[in-house]
Amino acid sequence: MFQNFDVTARPEQGPARLAALRAEMERDKIDGFLVPRADAHQGEYVAPRDERLAWLTGFTGSAGFCAVLSHIAGVFIDGRYRTQVKGQVADVYTPVPWPDVTLGDWLVEQLPEGGIVAYDPWLHSLQEIRDLTERLASSDISLVESDNLVDRIWPDQPAPPMQPARAHSEDYAGESAEKKAQRLAEGLRKSGQSAAVITLPDSIMWLLNIRGSDIPRNPVAHGFAILHDDARVDLFMAAEKLSELRIGAHVTLHAPDRFLEATAGLNGQVAVDARSLPQAVARVLGDRLAAVGDPCALPKARKNAAEIAGSAAAHLRDGAAVVETLAWLDTQEPGTITEIDVVKTLEGFRAADPALRDISFETIAGTGANGAIMHYRVTHDTNATLQEGHLLVLDSGGQYLDGTTDITRTIAIGSPGREEAEAFTRVLQGMIAVSRLRWPEGRSGRELEAIGRLPLWMAGQDFNHGLGHGVGAFLSVHEGPQGLSRINTVPLEPGMILSNEPGYYREGAFGIRIENLVVVEEAPALDTADPDRKMLAWRTLTFAPIDRRLVVPEMLSSGEREWLNSYHAEVNRTIAPRVSAAAAEWLNAACAPL
Image 1 (cartoon, rainbow, N blue to C red):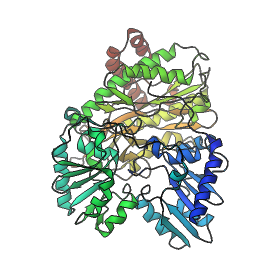
Image 2 (cartoon, rainbow, N blue to C red):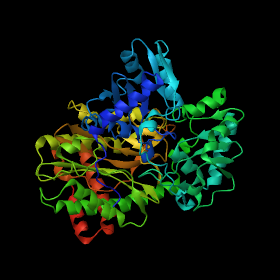
Image 3 (cartoon, one colour):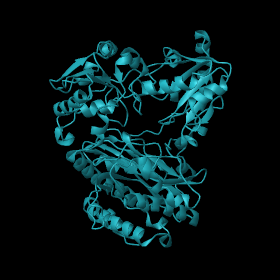
Image 4 (cartoon, rainbow, N blue to C red):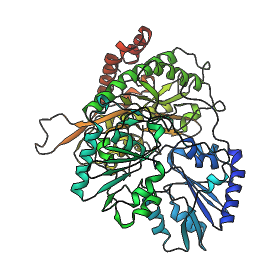
């Protein structure tokens, strides 16, 4: 099985580890130390060696950080984790709602007389340190670079990952690595940069058409890269990771410890992404850096025809695995199976596909109150039985050679109440509204995401996560720069794949989320459209039924009902030939029109 159910959060270990860290702070004569989630590559996901935040505090979320002072240790978490953090950290830590409360404001409040706050410059981006320095400029708080104090006190810290990387076929990539480098190098020349420094693992994988396994659930290998304006690439990666593939002639391999020296030796203006470039690298570049963004980010986000076709094919096979699971689930009596049973069954159906390489994240299978924990991970300690009247939030995905999937369905166990059904219907209405949307070219996720919240807002309800995130092509399940959130200003473009996943969560009671992946395309022509106005729309990639038992039909408009019936007809048509006879029979009933 891909997923284990061991308990990873041990709040009882937090006090001793915090005391050890404070002893190191006292030894170094500093008043604070910052412990981020990030690693030196500044991606969202980290290898076990770099799980410093989780090791110190017990908090296992994919975003957040800890600011340790002598009298208080703040764990900064966003809206997705405000329930989860309560059960994962000891009371020596203080949860801080972030970004509502910024680190700079919190430090000024906690250190009114000033002080010295240290940080590891490899684990914080140029933009982070710029913003924090600016906020603290009017205070007596000094920021200083330091080696990593957590590493000093972590006696059994895992070794760096050294898994082999493999070639990613051009049949799936749709373009050779050489052509990608040439295309991006031309962009550098036009913009007046001599090179670009790239630290994000998924950007390097995309650029070189390789995939790795240094991070669980994400097919990436750790390394750094410098792309030159003549299309040469210097790759700083352990040679043993590349022993099973041949890199292109335009790529020169170097040991990772040569990266900083090579960066310091660059001439001319160097393109960087200020949000992902470690401060340690920014320091050696000085005034040569041009904070114009990662040159791979947008080309990677704009999937080409081969990547879109691969993703669509992966979703059909993935949809069949989900349908087999849902059909099985419907035959189980309430009170007879657990969350772990559901996860194992779904993994079993996915694993039958020879193109599957991993799950794309730890499956979220939360029933009852566990469903209200947005990024819940079932363990042997939390494993709950599916009971009569519960809702089950099942959020999962697969990493296939031809695409990455991510799907959420909320399933009725027995007969849930009217409150749950009405909330579910509002979430569904938001998802349908986004699915049906047409919008003018140039609009960003910030301008569209409220549409998925409107039905909930009208009932005085909302949810504390973004409406959707970008998704890679056999890469990270969370991909930037595109997104559907109130802070995302990147214009949506054809080829971008995103999730559409409104939700609703009643802490201690139930959770609801419905998620499809969608790809941006040019909108079909309309007789009423302005001839000079280009419009975009979504094409849905995900095919699995939405639980009709939780829909309150009289709450739906005729257009919403038509969309749902049409979607279910397409699900039945495309998935039924791919599943067992018993699952096909179940699917036919599950997709019956309202």
